[in-house]
Length: 76
Figure 1 (cartoon, rainbow, N blue to C red):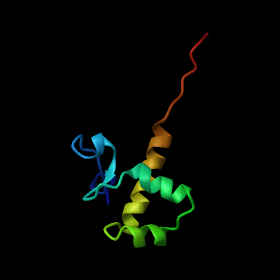
Figure 2 (figure 1 turned 120 degrees about the horizontal axis):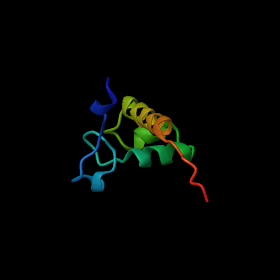
Figure 3 (figure 1 turned 180 degrees about the vertical axis):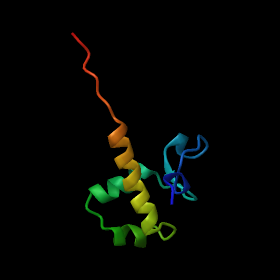
């Protein structure tokens, strides 16, 4: 399933932050939960509208952003 079917950006929802489609759960929030060592099962139990595929899409979105990030040194 394409990432755009799971992750959406809408200026009317959470000021345009990427969210899981059909929810008000920001991708960054899901990633923070995972980084805080909350298990996939705990996240799914706490947010019943979320699916395993949604969590994987959040990770995929983060991976995409990490690949796209480029830093360019600025000469002093």
